[in-house]
Image (cartoon, protein in one colour):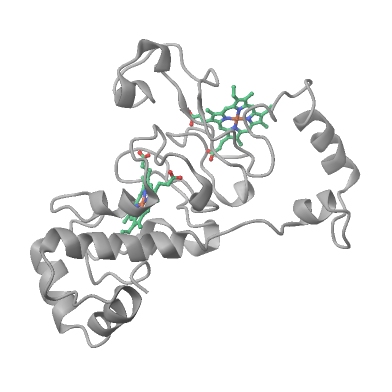
Length: 228
Ligand code: HEC
Ligand code: HEC
C-alpha cells in the first residue's frame, strides 16, 4: 500500500511512479539522476543494491528515498509525521505488522518501519515461473521457438559467453563487472569505483538480472540503448 501511495512524498511521487508495475517495476526513460531505473524483480536475493552497489540491505534502501530534499520522494518530517498521523489506516496497519505505535516512536525509527514494510513488499516481487522456467523444467507451456532455441544455445555457451555474468537461476552472478561500454571514466560512469575507491572497480556495474528484460528499455546503467 505504501509503495503505491504518495502519502510520504512532498513531490507527489510514490515508489510506483518510477517503479511502474506494467514494465516490471521500472520506467521507460531516464530516472531523475540520469541513471536508468532498475526493475524490481527477485530483489530478496540481491547481495547489493543500486547500479554501483551502494547499499547492502534491502531494508535500508528506502531510507535514502525518505530524506528531505531527495529527488526520489523529497519526504520531509511533515509528510512522514502529519500525513501518517492523520491517515485513517496506517497507524493500525503498523501496529498489526510490527506491534508498534508508529505515532509515538522517534522519526528515525518511524522511517525504519516504513522502509521495512516496503522491503517486505519488494521481496514478493518474484519471477520464477516464466515460459523459460517451464522450458527448463520440461513442463507444458515451456516451448521455445527455433530462433529462441538458437539464442539459448549462444547465451549459455562460450560462443555468446553471457552466462558467466548472467547465469541461472537469476540471470546474474550477483557481482560487479565491466562489460566494456566505455574507456573514459568521469562522473556518471565511475561505477563501483564511486563506492570502493579502488581503481580496479572503474566502470564496473552490477551485472543486472535479465528477467523481464523485454519490458525494461532503455538498457544499461545510463539507459544508452533504446532497444534490446
Ligand atoms: C523519481 C524516481 C524514483 C522513485 C520515486 C523511487 N525510485 Fe527507486 N530507484 C530509482 C532509480 C533511478 C534507481 C537506481 C539508482 C542507482 O543505482 O543509481 C532506483 C533504485 C531502487 C532500488 C535498487 C534496485 C536494485 O536493483 O538494486 C530499490 C530497492 C528501490 N529503488 C526502491 C524504491 C522504493 C521502495 C521507493 C519508494 C520509497 C523508490 N524506489 C522510489 C528511481 C526511483
Ligand atoms: C563480464 C560480465 C558480462 C558478460 C560476459 C555479459 N554481460 Fe550483460 N551486462 C553486464 C553488466 C555489468 C551490465 C550492466 C552494465 C552497465 O549498465 O553499465 C550488463 C548489462 C546487460 C544488459 C542490460 C540490462 C539492463 O537492465 O539494462 C543486457 C540485456 C545484457 N547485459 C545482456 C548480455 C548478453 C546477451 C550477453 C552475452 C552476449 C552478456 N550480457 C554478457 C555484464 C556482462
